[in-house]
Length: 295
Image (cartoon, rainbow, N blue to C red; front, side, top):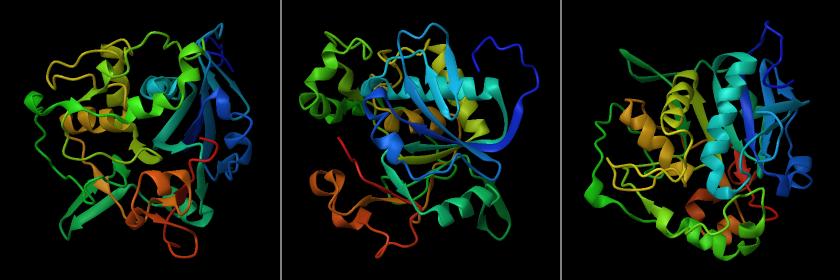
């Protein structure tokens, strides 16, 4: 299926599980991914980028290839472009569950989440929509948060700098299109009260459409300077999502029973403390575990 298909009748799904990956991991992480092609009326799609594709996108089975840079720094563009094309291809009733390609899922708990109504009761008289859900960096939800950009509080986040120090070969990969990019310059990030950890995040249709509209307004330019926050917020997608969504009155919802870093994985041993790490035995309530395999 390609962008200019003459098919007018769209397939309908309750939701999409969108696994973001890249060509580097197509024959490792994606081959080892423990997900079925679908879960009831939730379809699983894996996406990679190909900057030299001769059309906007193509769908081959459950592999979506889009005309986009395949670099880590371009994760946001790849993800939001994927959303745009998914809504062109399908009628989606609820939303999209964004997943890393290096997650190991507890499929029973995953199916339970997919089947549940995407509503949350916050008190006996108040029920809100689940629009933006995952594991919050603050360990709590932000509900009806009056978000205001604070440009004086922007600062350098060295996440990308550290990543590219150990992935120098990416600068010479034409599929990545980052030759000569000053990663440090584009590591100036906005101050935000909390973010959702990237390996697994649920976005409702409402949130997806806000992200698409925002990225279209800046022509999907990840190097765009955001004056309100005095930063370049589009190069680390985890931080971009709350910046855009909180600004549009979307609640950031935290759940403990979501995902953890797999014990003894690279993420656990180099980045995170034990309290957000676990395994199937000691954390049976978690939907998924992040391995960082083949990094």
